[in-house]
Length: 457
Image (cartoon, rainbow, N blue to C red; front, side, top):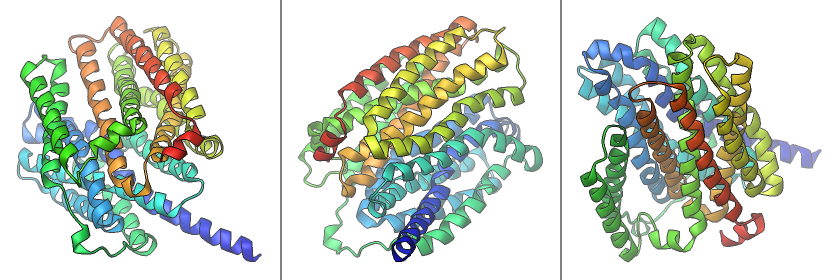
């Protein structure tokens, strides 16, 4: 009984910890998806064009892409619990003030503060979980993946319901139940940050500024691809990348240890692979509803049900994937995920305006399975290649990779659907996705197995 009591108490402690982090982590995907259904009302209130209003989405991605690794580094330096709670406070400030914005510029600013706050929660939370839960980490990450997937999947549905009854300010106020639960639990559950001497804390401010400029430059270049290819944006992005690399390579305590990334190619390849996976996922996540509604003329509720195949199967797969990874490592599950991407995107070629709902749901479910395998598989692969001390920064860069993939998918959809949504353009998503899927498969094949990965960490 004593052993059982001890293990049961540990399990309860771990579940409370996961719940605390999960209620914070879900805020970023929730807020990035809910805003999509609120753009129309925001346009009317502030008398904007669609392209102006869409900056609420673009700036959220830009802010998150920069803030994730920066806040991850700060959590490594100043304490993960401290930064986690600061992130929640920033979301509170933004969510309270945004509904009272006197102009669109103010709303844009509060939205960026919200992005920075929610971006703090993932790297800080991952660092805490990795420090506390030393066994069966993949199972814990699988649980977190469920929260993130559910909030992303149902974000648009929740947003539509809230706007119907409370207009667009309601999509900011809905954050409070999650924030309150996460904050109260964080005070009690999250472990105290170790006391560090002031001389131990050195922050690479110039490196952070150069990184910010580099990421913003690249993302603006990628965002502009759907309208025109800008040579000067490309040249500026390359120049800033070179300057950032040279500066960080000479820095004794860099913001991003570029030399370590250069030596530990496994981490670099994880980031690249995650970019490719998200190009496919978000091309499907945003491209399929556009085709279903514009070409097949389906109602939004039918489209929403069909799209649950992508997110829903990902939610079902995540806990099973976690157990599999704990037993066999990340590589086997990523091989299945890679093959599922190829099969799923090729299945898109069979979808036509006269396709049955059952067939569409079946085709999309394969992509949902790949999403469940790849998300948790990539996270656990990353953590097998980095030390606990690097978790915050590594987690932040991992999420930056997701946003780069998201914006690349946006550019792809802009090029394909910019003038007209046709079946042949939709099928091109499948062709491009299959090609990207093959690249993901090749990167998975070259990935070291569990034993080799652990020895490099």
